[in-house]
Image (cartoon, rainbow, N blue to C red; front, side, top):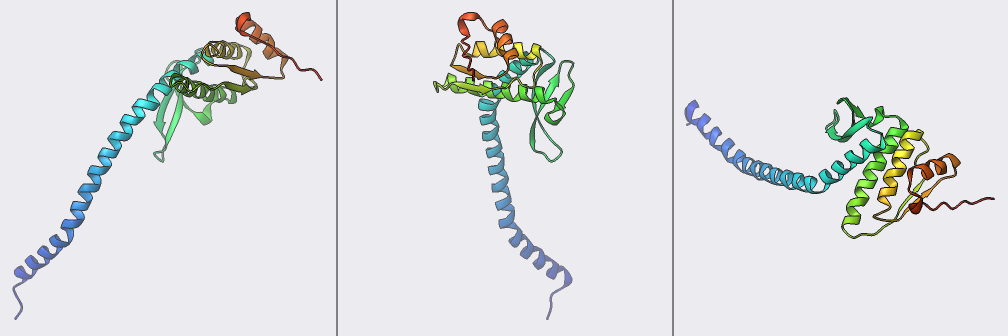
Length: 186
């Protein structure tokens, strides 16, 4: 003898509940773990990335002679982390929209900010750069050379170039007691 439709429905509901309960518990555990992981990652990001980006923002503004006021972390349409330059006035520009020279200045600002953080942790390493000003105009080259001269007070900076114009600019931008030029003639 079969039960009533109501009792059959009740039995099916109990079976479905029994099947769903462990999945719901697993889902709740995973969501909790995900939330904890996100909080720890955010704390780590704030501890490490934010100071580097803050310093890189200052350096980027200097390297671009104020054409850009900063750097902003963001996400693209696929929810991937990206960086944007912020022009003076607030316009946000993705890296692909920057000129080659401005991209180089952005990457240099990030590199210097990261290296400063390493130096603060007593990791003494020199900064070696080779023709990094190739895509910079004279004004931004002077600004970059001045930043590198300040950086040289923390660690050794070796700047290689085969462009006599950059040596002239360095002589203008860097105090004479901080600059040593070694010329190689073939």
